[in-house]
Length: 199
Image (cartoon, rainbow, N blue to C red; front, top):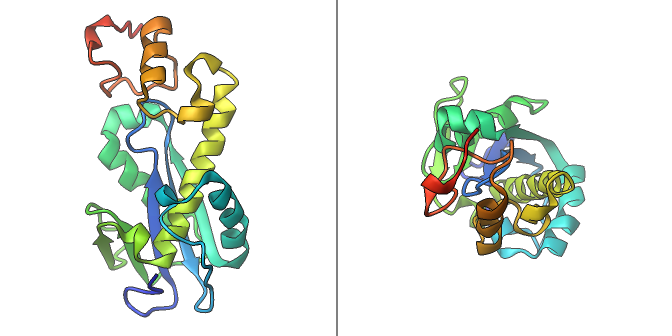
């Protein structure tokens, strides 16, 4: 994987997790890595096993110059839409860093200007640049941990397994039990949307 887009100390990578989920927050991370950091397992979180992500998380946190995590919940997602919520989450994570980055590299193709810091959107950046890959691992593991927690409140949806994604099991539970305060009402929760009660 590549170290920098701009060959710049202080370059931050950012990514989000949970954009396509039916329930729970969108979670973002921002990571500034040191020039000498490298780990052979580091990659886009989607191609890593849960075990490898959990192994990498403390390594990234220990070796990062700075990192931060943010959550934008389902209520805000419903207000501003998932694209804007994803960008907001990434900007909140960058804002949470203990130093101001010199350059921002973003996974994907959409972002908004942030504090006049130059940025570059990179499609599949989480499989190209180490800092974005590190951010993808942190965003995914922190969001999964959150979904495991709220699973205990509503176990019938099996969020511990599906993490809020639109699996057949998750949609069957929505059809049977209705929705919770964690579901995104602006999303197409079922093909038969009229069957849902949003009271």
